[in-house]
Amino acid sequence: MQPYVPLALLLVFVIVNAIGMIAASHFLSAVRRTEVKDRPYESGMPPLGSARERFDVKFYLVCVLFLIFDIETVFMLPWAVAFRELDLFGLGVVGGLIEMAVFVVILFVGYVYVIKRGALEWT
Image 1 (cartoon, rainbow, N blue to C red):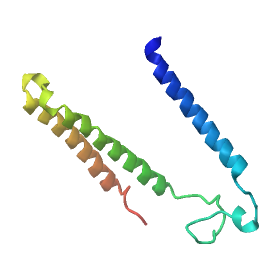
Image 2 (spheres, one colour):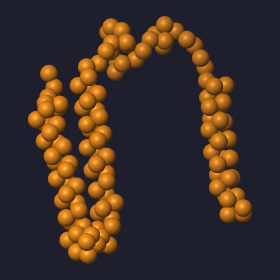
Image 3 (cartoon, one colour):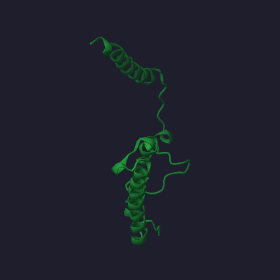
Image 4 (cartoon, rainbow, N blue to C red):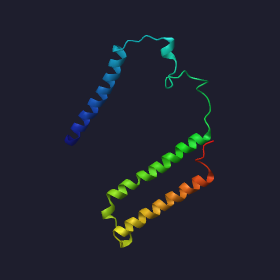
């Protein structure tokens, strides 16, 4: 149990610090509500229309595609770190290169599919 004491102290400190900062900002701040302060702020421009407008599905599709391709490229980092120790099918480093080549080809095929379907075309 003794090795966990520093971790428990750190956790208690973080929780007390977070609650203390929120409480201090609540009690020490001067609150004067005005009509201007209550309006939404959008890059210095007055808001136009309702905040409940519907977005085009293309917006969400591009976001999801970005996340998918971004996460797939993040998977390359552990491969690069462990590159010298890779030994796929007993081929050594060449096996690791083959493994990444297959991954990149699958990623490229998905990218070509997305482009052919017109998912990245913005109209």
